[in-house]
Image (cartoon, rainbow, N blue to C red):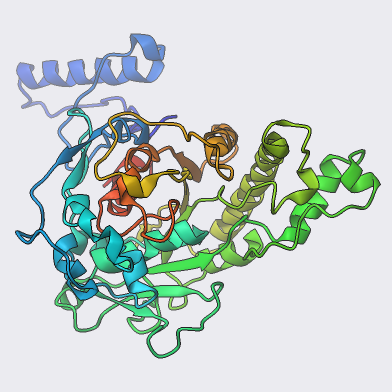
Length: 460
């Protein structure tokens, strides 16, 4: 994948020079002309290397490089060694506070005192990418500035993506406020949108350059929508029947799905939100992840007890077909939206909206027995759920997005840091990731770097 657009400078012949120009200047201009001519017309493998000083930041850390790093120890955030009450967990995680009020102690893994011995060790690690991987230093104030001035994030995914949203609400505190308020009403449905807005009391507010139409009260910086499969189930039923008309599901009029709960919207609905103009929206990046709900229990029509793992590869195969259809539809919707809106914002061309697909991750079956990171990724021993096949789902999605047909959709294989952290799960299960251990914060750090530095059109 090419991460940068080469600068294109048209060659213009030097028609004349002042009579007073020195021979030295003429020689320099002649050399420059030859370089530009050769750069324009020679094959790429024979072109001379042109290096000019530039104030723009060039990306040097593609996702595979960043994910090739390792976890290294760092000083714990507190000198205290014994967590004795849930309310002290912020100190043990090095977190000031969190804007989101949804299931706070569950997200912070402080809701089970039998696992409090993990603190502060669980927050005493940092991800170190390879030495040649230069990444923007994590700075919450710069992230907030970019979310306002360059465009916000729309997070699309299941409850693991909700983990990511909650972590962002802590990382960006005190500059953001969150809705809804779950202290006033803890019974909002999981499908209800969760938002982070710029807090008007933030000292940053007076220093920001707001885009036209931006409203501090109503324009989100980050939104999370719970969407497990990226399509509504009837649409997936129709897609499967169209692709496999001779299958027992189509021929026998069987259902593809069980009655297991799932939350979903059609791409047209959430891309419409993604591309909405201010003040309703100011999004520039949609962060997508799916895989956890693609199981033989939900996709019961594809279950086959005669095959390994009840036919999970049937689900993997259809996943690849569905993600091809998804990418095709989303790219078309992005193209349509871009063609319909004004190309200039305050005199400068708007960078295309981008979609990044974060690789999904499995859980660790014995997670609560661990107190430090792995040095190498370990496969599951017992094959719980679809966890040992998550890598297959990721490969399917990555293969789809390798196509040049989807220039605004990018796959980020940044799951390895999480795969090395069996100790960083929520206290209630071994799939969800706790805030403050560095895993979720690493996602935010790298995605922010990627969309502001690595992507073509975002280099500045």
